[in-house]
Image (cartoon, rainbow, N blue to C red):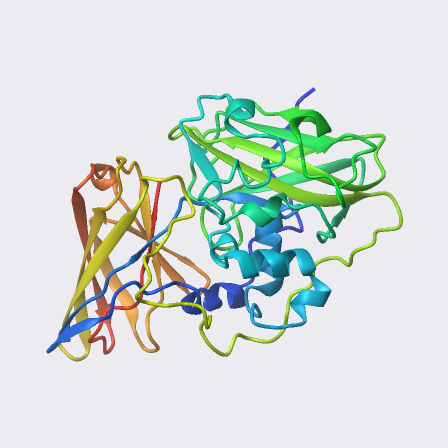
Length: 378
């Protein structure tokens, strides 16, 4: 009998605020700030939609949990070699942990995703997530035969269904890239409405808890998720490494204590940005700041720069010290730790190809140039 948990505690909550603070150093600035008097314009990096498994953590979310604040630490190569390889291949796989999805699959997941490419969602985003398909010594989370699987629906997409698979006994996660034949379907949920589930302590969205039973297994296994979002034909995928029984070879995830000291040395503001989502889904924005000394008005234009219509979007940014939001119009506001977030209202969610929408806000404090924004379309 399928059972979706609607409430109750769970140890796998969204990342700590210090990880969110590090996003400031992880967003790639794609054009220089152009200042003129008290007005400034900043271009905003396109990015992806949001959500993934956080308990047990997906491979890319787990790498972000453990190393998001310490991604330049060379010790990662020895302590967490699978994450090290993924960071070296493309840091955006972890920075865009919430964007591993495909569109227009039409429910034919096995047709869209070849064997050996399940963890990367069939290499969605090109080679960005490709190292997630590699077998090896991924950090594992210890579970019992009956455990709770948690997905963070960060944008309240809801779900037509979740399908939770676990690899069959005898599968070797250390040497064998995942195939469909390696999996057993252990849970499938009914439709879940947007916002149905558990409220995160911070960060917005919904935590969806699903009871899973996978008896008869020992050792290192993979939990594979298909999350068919209900707002649009978007299919999210993830691989979470777990350990059944005794003798767990890898330590439980621990949070690094040191903060990053610099932006990634490989970041080049002149490089063409990429998106973690399917080709054609992209947004960018410009923000104009009109300052009067003790406060400012910021007008933000969100533009569809891709080749497919945008059905929803969100912006992330951080204010400089001393600046706080006074009011906002034509958008809704929320926070995720120290991160500010703006989402559309009903009438400006949809942006056609080549189109744009605007919203505005007033702030208190000295602001003469726009902060760095991240645009998340879906």
